[in-house]
Length: 342
Ligand code: NAD
Image (cartoon, rainbow, N blue to C red; front, side):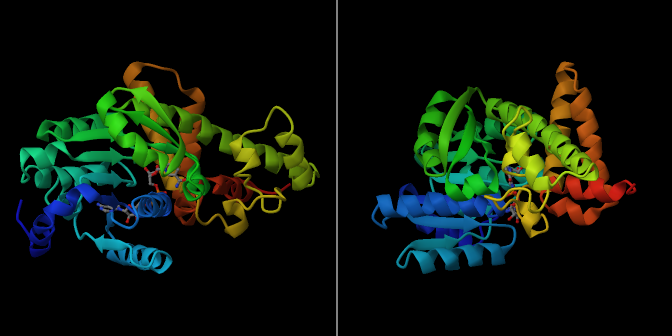
């Protein structure tokens, strides 16, 4: 790895590594998770912990650092320009990235975490813990974790359930895969960002659990969109229909929290109230449905509903590209406009 001036400065601060946490990927989820992790650690350690942020968009890192120091004057927060700098600065690194290529890029490639780890002393390497909360391909995650462990550091996959609202409220569920000792090391950090931390098994097991959960979610969100659309076409008020479903057997997170019809939930403000901005991007749900169909294909498990749902999300993204970056409940908007009114 070619050492940059910034990287050499980070190595110079190696004595601080133990009291430093880095967070890479400050998107819709990562920014909320990093805020909770940093603010709680800052208070608990009486301002003695250093925080480091890194994002492909440096303006995102700068905005986060500015907001954090505005809320916590005196907090020590720095911007890493590469993942290498982030791991050289801290013994604990959390990553929250879109998917497999981004995780490979951040861990494996030049200026990534693994080449930087290899430049450290054995003691510094063995005190390093990587927590990846990205939802990605299980085999890619297992390969990256094996490479991290090959250096002497520890790693867990810790994808999350609970959405942006859960990330903000600190009520996420973490589904963790990896060695028990790595899980034990990660546990206190995860409890600063979530309410439930579930050990699922060896490396990749957290991701298997997450992908199975999102398979259900992806199918349910389409079913709720279909039912809400059908009921309205037959003359029902969406508020009445939502309240019936939510007190009956059709109730699920997609109907009671992420209902896709503006005005249907009177006590909540799901992404449909903001033209489907924020939330969980349709392109990311399409990615997760693809991860589920790949896994099912690999082990020969039937997925008739999952395959249909994947096709619906693929149609949303290709036929109405504006919806790719909007919340996946916008499948309702797609269905409403894709089929002629009667
Ligand atoms: P996002 O696209 O909003 O954020 C990703 C962030 O990673 C962006 O800020 C991007 O600039 C940054 N990034 C990309 N490549 C990078 C690189 N090479 N180096 C540094 N930063 C890089 O995505 P999100 O909604 O926050 O989701 C993140 C992960 O969490 C995904 O795997 C998603 O499937 C999962 N997830 C999302 C939700 C949700 O509701 N949004 C819920 C559960 C799980």
